[in-house]
Amino acid sequence: MRLAPESIARDLKGTDGLGPGGKTNELVVALAGNPNTGKSTVFNALTGLRQHTGNWPGKTVAVARGRYNHEGTSFVVVDLPGTYSLFTNSAEEEIARDLLLAGAPDATVVVADAGCLERNLNLALQIVEITPRTVVCVNLIDEARKRGTTIDVNALAMDLGVPVVATAARSGMGLKELRDTIAAVATGAIRPEPVPVPYSNTVSHASNRLLPHILRLGFEERGARWIAMSLLHSSGAARDSLLRLMAERSAVADGEGGFAT
Ligand SMILES: Nc1nc2c(ncn2[C@@H]2O[C@H](COP(=O)(O)OP(=O)(O)OP(=O)(O)O)[C@@H](O)[C@H]2O)c(=O)[nH]1
Ligand SMILES: [Mg+2]
Image 1 (cartoon, rainbow, N blue to C red):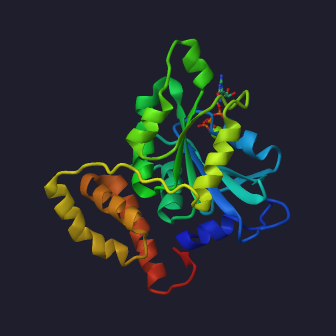
Image 2: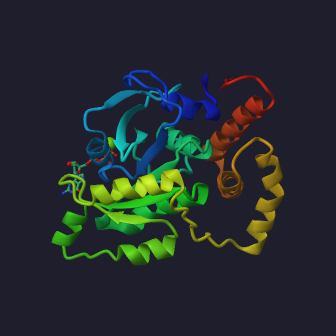
């Protein structure tokens, strides 16, 4: 038994250990990223001590959630487990993938290591394909600078089509700009337009044929496109995991209630 996608956002805002509140007007921020990029450090800097760690519904993976206020708006943040991709079938990747495909976050922050951006941007590209409401946080910028690396965040933002903020989360550098940018994306004051990933005509044609069947399950358009592409290039357990997610959505779409087995 696991939570249906629609109930994920509701559950995130719930009163389960997060203290008073559970306000439905809170905005949801997800922190995603490769392992060891400083997600939890960013999470702690954003939330202070207002946080709660519990297992993700139906999984034995611990996920921390916390709250903060920014200029009168209340945010609930979820610190996702570290993942290199959304394409395989580990419990960690399924959590990140399902949350994003549910359209639950009002903003998703991809925390990337400035010291090995190329590897980290692989996940960022997958995430911006699913949700345009993305901010790339180039963290550990202090370590990169020590090694003589400079990052042109403006060029990166242009190339990706989403805002990019450089941070050194351990010392708090860039956190004010990160909070402002998250708020702008989550409230819609900034509407990022990610640069589309080009696919060949053959792949696009095949994906277009799958798309209506996936949209019928209630996924957002971008998420549905991502699923179609992923179905085309995945195999084995990774494809089974996607098919399981679709079966769950199908059960929800058929009116079997808020939970799917
Ligand atoms: N110098 C420096 N160290 C940092 C920065 N951000 C995080 N760290 C350190 O990097 C290490 C990993 O940080 P975490 O916040 O645990 O990283 P994470 O992404 O949550 O790691 P996982 O949850 O294991 O994937 C810790 O020792 C942090 O103190 C930063 O901006 N600069
Ligand atoms: Mg962590």
